[in-house]
Length: 366
Picture (cartoon, rainbow, N blue to C red):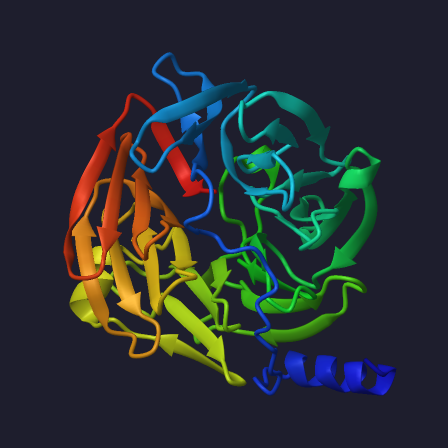
């Protein structure tokens, strides 16, 4: 992209415009598919109080458990390999590289001094570069740290976000654009999980060039306390952002936003549904095989599926402490809970509990 064009894009994006349009060429691997065995990996708490990363089959059979030093949060598969990564939960001082078939640990990579991971990461489509949201906790700055898997996960670059509290990151189907949920919340390891800047939060959905780190667009929610935490993207390039509202509990703002065809818009599911979500969404997943999107709220104990074209809620179920969501081959979703349940949800069918396990699933499935 010519420099003049890039500068114009960045200037427009910081002004809050939704003029940027991205292509949806869908070069990324599908999240779910009918080829080969499926498995879903998640961070788990064990009955004895210890922690692990575990993999389950779609029918709820636990395939392996790999002990880790502390509670983990989420991770990502490395394309084209049998590696899966999991990040320690905030503040995350390290991430683990594991064999996705056996759970064998290959590496434990520590964060740089003065930094911590925030629980998420994503690879380039060729599986070489890992992009991990990171918090520089003394100045309260959010960055993207870049690691080269061909160099034993050495840090090779740092991208500035010009903001606070990045959380989930994913890759656009164009293979070039990073999608970052910038939560806007300032925290510090010395103060546990206390939120230090609720009055001055500046959350955003950020689009970034994965090669240069240049910010291509920045979209702000309708209220400065709508923490933009979780993101996903459909194969056609439609981007979804899920919020966690930090304002008064009696207020019920929209909790989901969508960016498509150059327009950033928030979606309302209606007051009664918003009450059931408890102003908090822990996961959002666009199914790669259809036009459905699923979200889960552990605070509200509610998981639901909505139509991406009409925004209509088509299925909703109460699941205590539900948080993890992933797409299943065939069009359904798998939902996990902190109480050990795995539940299958789909269009025009009742939700079905497929497993009840003696583990505590953390907030995400991979």
